[in-house]
Length: 227
Image (cartoon, rainbow, N blue to C red):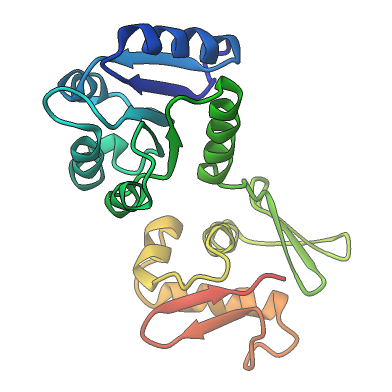
């Protein structure tokens, strides 16, 4: 099994079921840890992040609903970890209770192992952001990893400061980035960011005074509009 395989924690007081789930998920290329109750789960989550929790709702002591709520509020590294809740409680109100505390999906016991696997796959796909390496705006293509700007396959020369600035803006395309954040990444201080923005506009805008792609958002900062 690969070290970068998604790491799942199964939290269930039914030792036999937890063991079967670990075997089945391991056979399908996941790394799996087991916790027998909420306290055990917290101990394993202390300093270690997981890609998904498969959480039983009905457990002795603190139940899964309470644990899920606490994870969402105080979960540290695992505060946003996807949670698939297993439950024998199939009423709509029970599912709503789980969704209200931040559970991502529900699976009713008894269940088919294949359905569990499909739901896990779907949750992990939703939770894993698509990595964008290049963005396009007008006639331009910008490779974020290389810091290379092309206009119709012709390389546009950028200074190191302009390159870092464009990388930051491209990484948050469509979202305003504050001047302070741009200063932190580019090393430019104060109004120097505005100077770099002006220079960058001269290279990518038909009319730098009426920018189409690299715009100012009053009171917020700058935004790069990608296609």
